[in-house]
Length: 524
Image (cartoon, rainbow, N blue to C red; front, side):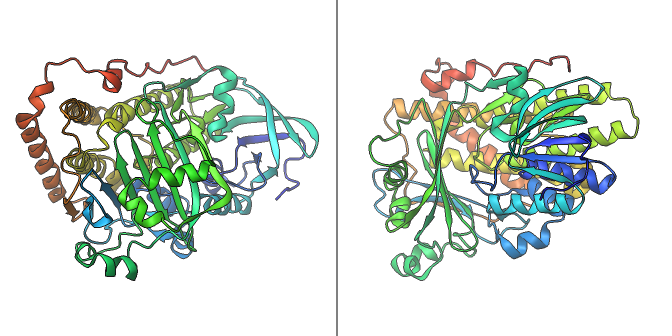
């Protein structure tokens, strides 16, 4: 992929990282301004696996409408059929006994189960076809930021150390977070201490296959769509697991757990421990009994969430995981890429047009800081406290997804790409929804803890089946949200009152330790 363009060592944009976030930013820029000299610096010879491999509605819009990948995705990836959740307790002896939440029919809006390594290569290929230069395998050793001037980048490539200049540096380096760590902006999100373990497997049983339909005929008839091509979640107190089918027969399987609650098993290989952990759940035991992991494709990452205190300046911008990471539950990572890549491209194009940058950069930093903090507090803070409760997860699923559809996912579909310039909860109209979502999330966590204190946790985890018709963008989609709110209030009156005035303990107490406000450092 090495080209001769830009051999004088000066570029308009140098992008650190060639996976989805970096390659997508290059594509957006070159489609609007083909004359830009763009260099992508990628450290790997081949892309590796990611935590979770599924899109949701906003990222699907970005991939199909902004990047033009619709045909590629339909030909090479699997269409995703929503989200599905499985619960167990001491009474569940088999898959059919487990309580279940999921769609009854096929999905109304497109989303995909994706092989990220393959898709990232495709987006990078398209960036090259548009004129981007790629150095691979190359590493960035240092970046000297110069506000309003040419950034200076020291790169090692083909056993040579070279000094480059570029008006813009885009950090798309993922968890390496090159700029945030170099400049001291990187912060661990200690209020959400999670770990992920994941791998690729073969021989995982097919949810929709003849074997399970014959073994559990009544169970098979409940769903009119496809269970196997949903993102399937196995749920437990303090943890959840994903089972994601991929094109060609591989299955992505992983566990994410709260370190305050779950102790990871010791002894044996990491892959064997992952399998042993999943086999404790009846659904995992049924599906994974004969499954085999792919040698060399087992991954572990501790302390998943982090964020940067600065997201952009006049000459640099952070995109994707280089700017922050929350949690793979609900697959928000590619939404974050969609927002950050779109907004970064808009920053660079505005500067190229000669427009004033100060207010744009201030807004960019403010919006992404608010988005990270509010999305974390509204959705993820101590959510793992109630992952083992069927009825509470069902209600949170209905409200989380409903508000996502009604207030977030509909924006790009109705307004076009401009809807990708306002990240989650960064606008004033979204503030009441943020407070409401944060409230019910906190209450569910506290109710679940109170149940454990009374030794009555997980009582609805067997024999329950909620088959959801699905959301769309019509006003009628507000009805499931309203019903979920009414059911929440009933739970509060029936049992929630026990915890109204009691001081929380354990993990829930961390809700009193609010994620530190993102400090707006002056851009260098």
